[in-house]
Length: 292
Image (cartoon, rainbow, N blue to C red):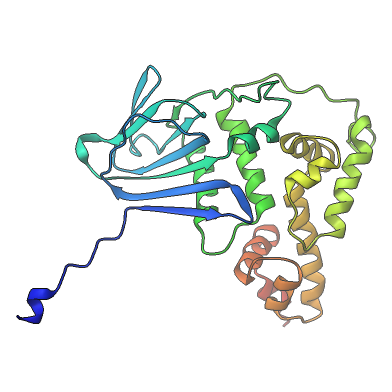
C-alpha cells in the first residue's frame, strides 16, 4: 500500500478555546470562539455572562426577546444573568466569532453587596448593546485574560467591577456618603481608608486582592473602589502602580537593569513594566535611564 494511501488529513484546530486562571482569578472563565458554526439549544448558565460579537452574525433569543447580533452594528455585546433561558446561534449557519466571559455569581453578588439587596440578585439594564464604548470596555478585559502573561488580579477585578457597574447594572441612586474630612475621605471611613492605603504602601510589590483590602473597612469590593478613589483620586490598583513607578524612577537613576527593576517591583515581566511606565511618564524606562 502506498504511504500516501494511509495518510490521514490533519485535524482542524478547534474553534473553541477556554482560558482560566484558577489560582489568580478562580471566579472567571473566558470562552474564545473563532469561525464557529456550532449551534446551541436553549440553555441557561449558573454564572453571569458577558460577551462580544467580533465577526459574523448571530440570532440571540432570550426570555421573550430576540435580537440580531452583528459586529457591523458598531461591535455588539450581550449580557445574561444566571438562569436566563437563551440561545445564540450563527445566522444561516455562517461562521461567527465571539468572546464570552463567565463570572461566578456568588463572587459578583458579594462584590456589590449591599447593592444586590437581601437576595444578592443584580438586575441587568439590558441584554444586548451596540455601544462602541461598552464593546471596547469588555474587549479590554477579555484581551487581558487571553494575553500570554498572567493578568494582574487587582487590576482586572477593578476593570470588571467598573464595567458591570457602568454598563451592565440597572441605574441606582448613588450611595449616601458621610461628610468628608479635610483630606476628602468620609468621616466614618477615614481610618479604614488610611489602613487600606497603608497596606498598599507596605505591600507595594506584592499581589493584592480587592477582597482583602475591602475587608479592612467592612465594605464590598465595589464600595472600596468608589470610596478609595473619592478619597485619594486613584483606584487601589492605580495607586499601587503609581507607587511602583515612582520607586522605579529612583532605581533606574541608580543604574539598575530594567529586568531587575521590573522583578523587584512586582511587575509580571519587563513589557508589563514598560507599558505602565510609558502610560504614566510618556517615555520608556530605557529612555528615562539613558543620559547624554
